[in-house]
Image (spheres, rainbow, N blue to C red):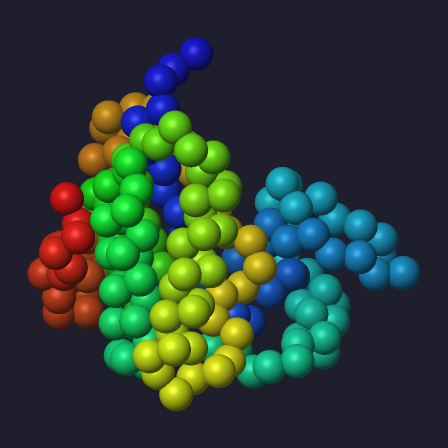
Length: 174
């Protein structure tokens, strides 16, 4: 079995990638007429499912302001500073966040959940926002190959360049 080099974690802002999205979705959902969809399987876009998901939303979709982005960045830096993993690349945009983390002995699902909780608390504490921050779930990719790692790092860094930022805009990126 190949050795894990690290992880690519993507979190979307609340309400921006719903079940039924035309890009596909990983969401689990239950509806009496349609039934249950497995969250570990990429499901094709479905306008009816997307409509139902929108109807169930209790808050409008979240788009991060610059202050919210800085709150998220600060919290990720605090998490990294107290962990056995490092952030090799990060991009925090108005709609989502990419993190490329080095290998950890800890449960990476728990680590991703912890980062989401800490960043949510930071946004609510340091900005005037009280809206939901993240969508349910995440994209989590295990990386075993050095060329895959390097390609992901460049991909994430290009997000920053497109926004006019340096490749590594925060000092906690290794």
